[in-house]
Image (cartoon, rainbow, N blue to C red):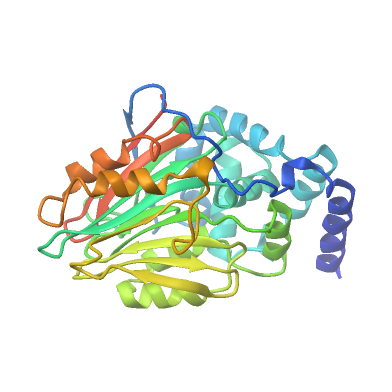
Length: 364
């Protein structure tokens, strides 16, 4: 009964704000007329999250360190919601155990404790990022079979560079992490991650007729946030094909693109996701298709003229070939306009086969 009441309360609040322009999807462009980046790249600090600790303790030290920055960013995120809806959502999501698996509910409790933000605010922070990101992801294969995975993560939320961290998820020893992720302090899911000798993953926003509010309601109905599905995949030791299968079929709170790299020939794929299942799985097909590119549009459709980050990616990738592509050249490609732009918060290059994972923040 309480759950039903909460759902009704949120739905009623939404009715009052449904005309808000903050939630419209009128433009076909995710990142309209991107502008060049400003300021140099900067190294990202590495932090450890010890999975042998009780879940509520794992993020406390990290979020204490970044508490003032997290508090400022949470206020900016909340400002994108009308005030009445803010209050309802923060109160509703404080009952986090109703919405998330116990491990993630407890980890978010630790985020709230460490950073000094309300529990409901911490939940919203952990939902918001995956629903609003513009991005570029590229998976490429060297002729020797090595897979390289590049990604830029673009957001309109200011200051995210200040809380960007490279996380080693450990089983008590930082010398042999279970898996890695680049994330924002206080964000316990994964949008960019890798398990050495296994897979690399990233997620790009897919534009649709849905709104942020639609996604929140879908979450309340029991669908899985993609950031947690990706973390589950990295933690589960699934190989490339099993990861593709799992991520093609789990019900998600929003449509998206999931980009996966592996460790063997042709282990690269872009999964175009509807909420319920994959609409398309597009794979490497060496040698004719030795790289694949995803920005924020279905790969079989033209990109909009006012946000064609796809064409520059193809142009710059085609300056190389499968015998010359490597981590250094992928880094160069990801740092060219307009894939690198004024909203890029970080650039990452991953290669699961050799365990390399490099991230730097942008626009510092």
